[in-house]
Length: 432
Image (cartoon, rainbow, N blue to C red; front, side, top):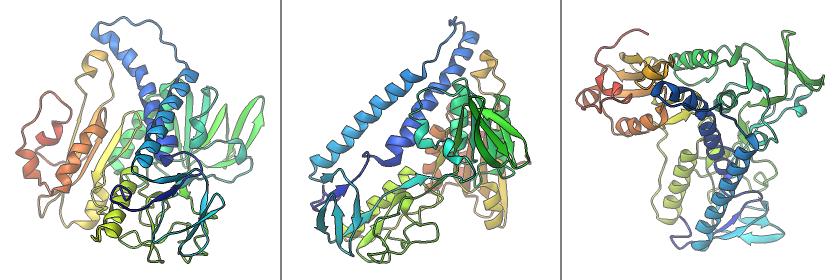
């Protein structure tokens, strides 16, 4: 965007264009989610009169097809950059001073520097941790593990648990806290845990890894309570941390916080006025490591620097989804957050069996929930657990951003029969 507006731009990337999202995050993850979802489709088809033979899954074919699509996207990104005149350097870069960037042995002077180096997968360093894999490596395994232990309780852990379970693996997910997905609505977290267990995932809370070792041709993970489990692979999904090491940031005077994130103000400006940082390496984006947030910050920097329009990103009402099975999606405040911030809170909820399940015989129920500020009638939170939750909540995010009230929801006609209509037909607040 900066180059398209006339700026002279150089970009250095030592690995693959597109960052985590394209190469080891959103895109390959969603492709694997689609693959896992076919198991339900095959099972559900019988209730609708379809006779389907015994399905067979080929992990290697999936990974090869996924790799082909990611390579195509890499080429698209490169073309988007070069077509507007961005000079791409396929090498690592670091700051050698406030305005000097060294990339591939060349030195460049810049009026402005943007740090957008993203994050790295975290590792829990207990004895034998090096035998485990991270999410980056999961996308390139030679074979699907028949048994896998997943250590972690965030997006990545829940999504890979669902993916591997759907593809036929025996999955155990361990989390040291009392309930996973901290920061999401408690009611939705409880409901997702119950759904995952009903699908055969061994979900263990208050469980912490102590050591990992090879035993009898497999991996043995021993927990702090002395119990152990055997697996063909162990995934450490303990979050990600800012990828800021050895970039010369301190040499240039750029401040970092205790987690290594680049400290920035509301305009993504660092402690050095002409150096900016966006995305997962930024202190403002921490705990909101989402691709659309990083993009919004980048566009704000372009407007601030090149258009003379100081722009700050509004981090309220950022929609997000966990592509678990079932999918969990939300926008706005959780019920717990609303009760802390609002004098009066009304909660509307609906639990129902999706129409599709009436013939397929599936018993998994959908949960839709609205959180309303009682004083203003404004809808401050929308949450959903069930099929198509991410698609539905994306639309609701527009309403919340526009300041829609419960009266606006009530005055909206529904599309029937859909799951989304539940959000405009809930009339009576009630207890869980």
